Length: 211
Image (cartoon, rainbow, N blue to C red; front, side, top):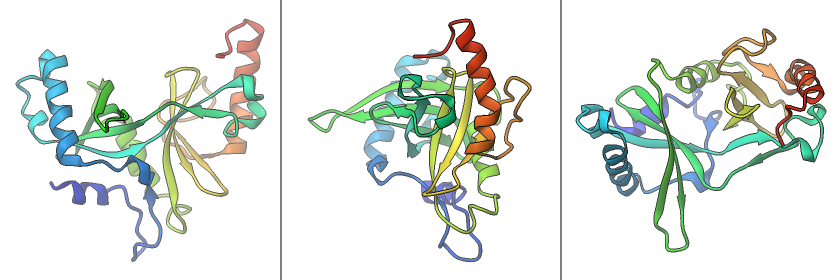
């Protein structure tokens, strides 16, 4: 399947193309060049995949930023407004119609690509891929554009898709958390704050809040 067709899986259409899940313009890449570098990186770094035919069909796409809360900037009452993000972008690694994992990419001052942060999952299908499919079915997304972001609460333990717009941000957990939220169920920011606040308060009591 061509990358353009795969990308359409991430678009939310309601009979026209006026509403979609979108990705940052800054994350666009020369896919032919980057794909070659990523394939070489995978073969060199991951011996089990060196002879895996899926690698030959690999596409690097849907670049997005990764965020996490920094409690030095405020409390859990301001969950999304205290988030920070790292340099570069994370991309989905797609082979055919399957997502194999993610990889981090950034360009240096000489416009050379630095590859790192490769994560491949053994479980199928990839949780982010499932979450993206769930996201495109949301009625809110069919009426306006949402930027795809990736949010991690408490390190990498509780990953979420963060659909961002000027208002009404949507959070979709990719795993169950503290018996308080359900995987792939959409939550508003205010709903997630109510669920996450007691967790942060409990961690604070035992000195476990991330800094």
